Image (cartoon, rainbow, N blue to C red; front, side, top):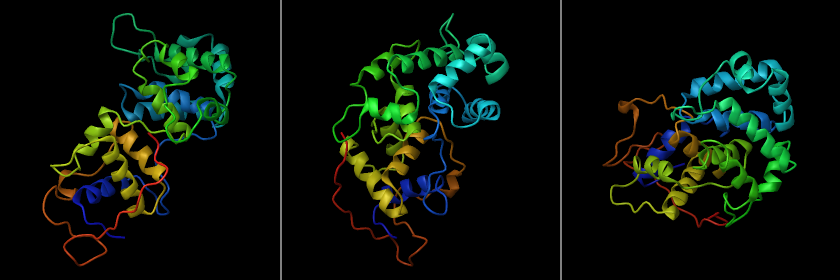
Length: 265
Protein backbone atom coordinates (compact mmCIF):
# COMPACT_ATOMS: atom_id res chain seq x y z
CA UNK A 1 0.00 0.00 0.00
CA UNK A 2 1.28 3.50 -0.82
CA UNK A 3 0.84 6.99 0.58
CA UNK A 4 1.59 10.52 -0.55
CA UNK A 5 2.31 12.47 2.63
CA UNK A 6 5.60 12.36 4.47
CA UNK A 7 3.84 12.64 7.81
CA UNK A 8 1.79 9.49 7.30
CA UNK A 9 4.82 7.67 5.88
CA UNK A 10 6.94 8.58 8.88
CA UNK A 11 4.25 7.66 11.41
CA UNK A 12 3.59 4.40 9.56
CA UNK A 13 7.28 3.57 9.78
CA UNK A 14 7.32 4.14 13.52
CA UNK A 15 4.11 2.24 14.18
CA UNK A 16 5.14 -0.57 11.87
CA UNK A 17 8.04 -1.30 14.18
CA UNK A 18 5.54 -2.50 16.78
CA UNK A 19 3.39 -4.64 14.50
CA UNK A 20 3.73 -8.35 13.81
CA UNK A 21 3.60 -9.98 10.40
CA UNK A 22 -0.20 -10.09 10.47
CA UNK A 23 -0.81 -6.55 11.71
CA UNK A 24 -1.11 -7.57 15.35
CA UNK A 25 0.14 -5.08 17.88
CA UNK A 26 3.25 -6.19 19.77
CA UNK A 27 2.59 -3.79 22.62
CA UNK A 28 1.44 -4.37 26.21
CA UNK A 29 -2.24 -5.26 26.60
CA UNK A 30 -4.04 -7.64 28.93
CA UNK A 31 -7.62 -8.27 27.79
CA UNK A 32 -7.80 -11.38 30.01
CA UNK A 33 -6.47 -9.85 33.24
CA UNK A 34 -7.54 -6.67 34.97
CA UNK A 35 -4.87 -7.36 37.59
CA UNK A 36 -2.13 -7.01 34.98
CA UNK A 37 -3.79 -3.90 33.53
CA UNK A 38 -3.74 -2.27 36.97
CA UNK A 39 -0.13 -3.22 37.64
CA UNK A 40 1.11 -1.98 34.28
CA UNK A 41 -0.90 1.25 34.49
CA UNK A 42 0.29 2.22 37.98
CA UNK A 43 3.92 1.23 37.48
CA UNK A 44 4.25 2.74 33.99
CA UNK A 45 4.65 6.39 34.98
CA UNK A 46 8.19 7.50 35.74
CA UNK A 47 9.59 4.03 35.11
CA UNK A 48 11.63 2.47 32.35
CA UNK A 49 9.52 0.02 30.31
CA UNK A 50 11.82 -2.83 31.35
CA UNK A 51 11.05 -2.20 35.02
CA UNK A 52 7.31 -2.35 34.34
CA UNK A 53 7.71 -5.53 32.30
CA UNK A 54 9.58 -7.15 35.20
CA UNK A 55 6.80 -6.35 37.67
CA UNK A 56 4.21 -7.83 35.33
CA UNK A 57 6.37 -10.87 34.56
CA UNK A 58 6.93 -11.59 38.26
CA UNK A 59 3.21 -11.48 38.93
CA UNK A 60 2.48 -13.79 36.00
CA UNK A 61 5.17 -16.22 37.19
CA UNK A 62 3.50 -16.47 40.60
CA UNK A 63 -0.19 -16.14 39.75
CA UNK A 64 -0.72 -16.62 36.02
CA UNK A 65 -2.10 -14.16 33.50
CA UNK A 66 -5.85 -14.25 34.15
CA UNK A 67 -6.23 -12.70 37.60
CA UNK A 68 -8.87 -10.07 38.20
CA UNK A 69 -8.74 -7.10 40.55
CA UNK A 70 -10.03 -9.17 43.48
CA UNK A 71 -7.27 -11.77 43.14
CA UNK A 72 -4.66 -9.01 42.96
CA UNK A 73 -6.00 -7.54 46.20
CA UNK A 74 -5.91 -10.98 47.84
CA UNK A 75 -2.31 -11.52 46.73
CA UNK A 76 -1.29 -8.26 48.39
CA UNK A 77 -3.12 -9.20 51.59
CA UNK A 78 -1.55 -12.67 51.59
CA UNK A 79 1.90 -11.10 51.39
CA UNK A 80 1.18 -9.11 54.54
CA UNK A 81 0.30 -5.80 52.90
CA UNK A 82 1.51 -3.50 50.16
CA UNK A 83 5.06 -2.97 51.39
CA UNK A 84 6.05 -6.64 51.83
CA UNK A 85 4.25 -7.41 48.57
CA UNK A 86 6.30 -4.71 46.84
CA UNK A 87 9.52 -5.98 48.38
CA UNK A 88 9.14 -9.73 47.94
CA UNK A 89 6.67 -10.22 45.09
CA UNK A 90 6.93 -7.21 42.80
CA UNK A 91 10.55 -6.59 43.86
CA UNK A 92 9.91 -2.91 43.24
CA UNK A 93 9.78 -0.28 45.98
CA UNK A 94 9.33 2.70 43.67
CA UNK A 95 7.23 5.52 45.17
CA UNK A 96 4.19 6.88 43.37
CA UNK A 97 5.79 10.31 43.02
CA UNK A 98 9.03 12.16 43.76
CA UNK A 99 7.48 14.14 46.60
CA UNK A 100 8.93 13.45 50.07
CA UNK A 101 6.90 10.85 51.90
CA UNK A 102 5.13 9.62 48.78
CA UNK A 103 3.40 6.26 49.13
CA UNK A 104 4.69 3.26 47.25
CA UNK A 105 3.22 2.40 43.89
CA UNK A 106 2.28 -0.93 45.44
CA UNK A 107 0.08 0.94 47.93
CA UNK A 108 -1.64 2.72 45.05
CA UNK A 109 -2.16 -0.65 43.37
CA UNK A 110 -3.80 -1.95 46.54
CA UNK A 111 -6.03 1.13 46.73
CA UNK A 112 -6.91 0.75 43.03
CA UNK A 113 -8.16 -2.80 43.61
CA UNK A 114 -10.42 -1.45 46.36
CA UNK A 115 -11.81 1.15 43.96
CA UNK A 116 -12.68 -1.66 41.59
CA UNK A 117 -14.36 -3.58 44.42
CA UNK A 118 -16.40 -0.52 45.36
CA UNK A 119 -17.87 -0.48 41.85
CA UNK A 120 -18.30 -4.23 41.50
CA UNK A 121 -15.51 -4.51 38.94
CA UNK A 122 -13.34 -7.62 38.86
CA UNK A 123 -12.41 -8.36 35.25
CA UNK A 124 -11.77 -6.38 32.08
CA UNK A 125 -15.31 -6.90 30.88
CA UNK A 126 -16.65 -5.35 34.07
CA UNK A 127 -14.38 -2.34 33.60
CA UNK A 128 -15.39 -1.74 29.99
CA UNK A 129 -19.06 -2.04 30.92
CA UNK A 130 -18.68 0.42 33.80
CA UNK A 131 -16.74 2.93 31.72
CA UNK A 132 -18.91 2.66 28.63
CA UNK A 133 -17.76 3.13 25.07
CA UNK A 134 -18.90 4.88 21.94
CA UNK A 135 -18.56 8.09 20.00
CA UNK A 136 -18.39 11.17 22.18
CA UNK A 137 -18.02 9.22 25.44
CA UNK A 138 -15.63 11.07 27.77
CA UNK A 139 -13.02 8.81 29.37
CA UNK A 140 -13.12 10.93 32.53
CA UNK A 141 -16.88 11.38 32.96
CA UNK A 142 -17.65 8.17 34.85
CA UNK A 143 -17.52 7.61 38.60
CA UNK A 144 -14.82 4.93 38.39
CA UNK A 145 -12.49 7.41 36.70
CA UNK A 146 -13.13 10.00 39.39
CA UNK A 147 -12.39 7.50 42.15
CA UNK A 148 -9.22 6.33 40.39
CA UNK A 149 -7.95 9.90 39.97
CA UNK A 150 -8.55 10.51 43.68
CA UNK A 151 -5.88 7.91 44.46
CA UNK A 152 -2.46 9.21 45.59
CA UNK A 153 -0.52 10.86 42.71
CA UNK A 154 -3.11 9.81 40.09
CA UNK A 155 -4.98 13.10 39.62
CA UNK A 156 -3.60 13.75 36.12
CA UNK A 157 -5.51 10.76 34.76
CA UNK A 158 -2.52 9.43 32.81
CA UNK A 159 -2.57 6.05 34.55
CA UNK A 160 -6.35 5.86 34.09
CA UNK A 161 -5.91 6.30 30.35
CA UNK A 162 -3.10 3.72 30.42
CA UNK A 163 -5.49 1.34 32.15
CA UNK A 164 -8.18 1.78 29.50
CA UNK A 165 -5.69 1.31 26.66
CA UNK A 166 -4.28 -1.86 28.25
CA UNK A 167 -7.78 -3.22 28.74
CA UNK A 168 -8.67 -2.71 25.09
CA UNK A 169 -11.06 0.20 25.51
CA UNK A 170 -11.78 2.11 22.29
CA UNK A 171 -11.52 5.51 23.98
CA UNK A 172 -8.45 7.50 23.00
CA UNK A 173 -7.35 10.77 24.54
CA UNK A 174 -5.31 13.21 22.42
CA UNK A 175 -3.20 14.82 25.14
CA UNK A 176 0.00 16.88 24.99
CA UNK A 177 2.21 13.80 24.78
CA UNK A 178 0.29 12.42 21.82
CA UNK A 179 0.35 15.79 20.05
CA UNK A 180 4.08 16.09 20.70
CA UNK A 181 4.70 12.64 19.27
CA UNK A 182 2.73 13.47 16.13
CA UNK A 183 4.59 16.77 15.85
CA UNK A 184 7.79 14.80 15.30
CA UNK A 185 6.38 13.24 12.13
CA UNK A 186 3.89 15.87 10.97
CA UNK A 187 4.24 18.30 8.12
CA UNK A 188 5.96 21.49 9.38
CA UNK A 189 2.92 23.60 8.51
CA UNK A 190 0.35 21.20 9.97
CA UNK A 191 -2.17 22.48 12.47
CA UNK A 192 -2.03 19.73 15.09
CA UNK A 193 -5.68 19.66 16.04
CA UNK A 194 -7.44 16.66 17.55
CA UNK A 195 -9.00 15.98 14.14
CA UNK A 196 -5.57 16.07 12.48
CA UNK A 197 -4.24 13.48 14.95
CA UNK A 198 -7.21 11.17 14.37
CA UNK A 199 -6.89 11.56 10.58
CA UNK A 200 -3.21 10.62 10.72
CA UNK A 201 -3.92 7.57 12.87
CA UNK A 202 -6.73 6.36 10.61
CA UNK A 203 -4.54 6.89 7.54
CA UNK A 204 -1.69 4.92 9.08
CA UNK A 205 -4.05 2.08 10.00
CA UNK A 206 -5.12 1.79 6.37
CA UNK A 207 -1.53 1.97 5.15
CA UNK A 208 -0.42 -0.76 7.54
CA UNK A 209 -3.60 -2.78 6.96
CA UNK A 210 -4.30 -3.02 10.66
CA UNK A 211 -6.96 -1.92 13.13
CA UNK A 212 -7.22 1.72 14.15
CA UNK A 213 -7.19 0.56 17.76
CA UNK A 214 -3.77 -1.02 17.19
CA UNK A 215 -2.29 2.24 15.92
CA UNK A 216 -3.91 4.18 18.75
CA UNK A 217 -2.32 1.91 21.33
CA UNK A 218 1.09 2.21 19.67
CA UNK A 219 0.85 5.99 19.50
CA UNK A 220 -0.35 6.27 23.08
CA UNK A 221 2.25 3.95 24.55
CA UNK A 222 5.11 5.32 22.45
CA UNK A 223 4.24 8.94 23.20
CA UNK A 224 4.11 8.20 26.95
CA UNK A 225 7.34 6.20 27.03
CA UNK A 226 5.76 2.81 27.75
CA UNK A 227 7.37 1.37 24.60
CA UNK A 228 10.68 2.51 23.13
CA UNK A 229 11.71 2.59 19.50
CA UNK A 230 14.84 0.77 18.36
CA UNK A 231 15.05 2.86 15.19
CA UNK A 232 18.14 5.01 14.85
CA UNK A 233 18.04 8.52 13.43
CA UNK A 234 19.62 7.32 10.21
CA UNK A 235 16.87 4.70 9.84
CA UNK A 236 14.04 7.22 9.89
CA UNK A 237 12.42 8.52 6.75
CA UNK A 238 13.28 12.16 5.96
CA UNK A 239 11.10 14.94 7.34
CA UNK A 240 11.23 16.88 4.07
CA UNK A 241 11.45 15.97 0.42
CA UNK A 242 10.08 12.96 -1.44
CA UNK A 243 10.03 9.60 0.30
CA UNK A 244 10.96 6.49 -1.62
CA UNK A 245 8.46 3.83 -0.67
CA UNK A 246 9.54 0.19 -0.32
CA UNK A 247 6.72 -1.03 -2.58
CA UNK A 248 7.04 1.46 -5.40
CA UNK A 249 9.72 2.86 -7.67
CA UNK A 250 8.10 6.31 -7.71
CA UNK A 251 9.41 9.16 -5.61
CA UNK A 252 6.41 9.12 -3.25
CA UNK A 253 3.90 6.66 -1.88
CA UNK A 254 0.39 7.14 -3.19
CA UNK A 255 -2.51 7.14 -0.81
CA UNK A 256 -6.17 8.14 -1.21
CA UNK A 257 -7.66 9.08 2.15
CA UNK A 258 -11.12 7.80 2.95
CA UNK A 259 -13.74 9.53 5.10
CA UNK A 260 -13.32 8.67 8.77
CA UNK A 261 -16.57 7.37 10.20
CA UNK A 262 -17.43 6.82 13.82
CA UNK A 263 -14.49 8.75 15.24
CA UNK A 264 -14.69 9.21 19.03
CA UNK A 265 -14.27 12.69 20.50
